[in-house]
Each structure stands twice: as structure tokens, then as C-alpha cells.
Length: 115
Image (cartoon, rainbow, N blue to C red):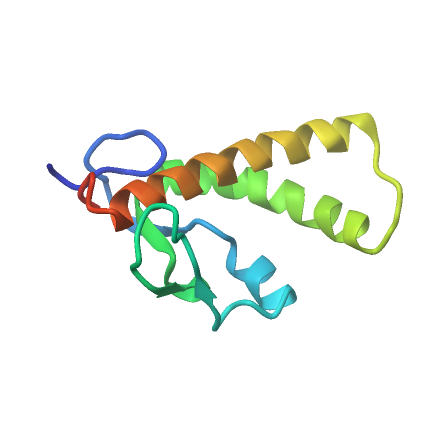
């Protein structure tokens, strides 16, 4: 199977890499250098900093806007501050992106699809 963009599924154009768990979050939670365990799928060991997969630059930039909008919301929640309904909707969209990214990473690490 050919490599595909984790967002659109097509061969990556102007390829860059998408970190499934954002670097800022794994650094903030002090997990950046720790192993990410996906034992229900594979025994492969990979560190959070290396949990990244091909993406089109265009797709990654588009989802980067969601990431930028989400970061201050998530930081507010982690600091115990209130958030609005609109911010919750942005956060839920971001959770969907992360959930799909983790699912795809499990498939790739289990060698069920190629990167």
C-alpha cells in the first residue's frame, strides 16, 4: 500500500509530518520523551515525540488552524478556567481529529497499512 496523508488519504503533496499528539501537549504534560503504549494493537514501542505520520502541507496547515484555536481552550480547562459553548465545540472537533489520528497510528504501527 502506498503512503497516504493522514487527513485526506491521498498520496501526500508537499509532504510534511503530522504529530498525532501535538508536541506542545506532550511537552506540557511531560510525556514528550516517554513511550506511547498501544499494546492492544502492537508491541511496537514509539515515543510521543516520534508519533508522527505523513500529511499534505495543505491538509496539515488547515488542521493547524484547529490546533491553534484549541490550545488556549485546553490550557484554560487544565487551569480550571471556564470555557464557552463555542469553545467546547472547537475542543470536540479537535478530539475527533486526535481520535482518528490515534486510530490510524495504531493501524500503521500494527502494519495493517503503510505510512
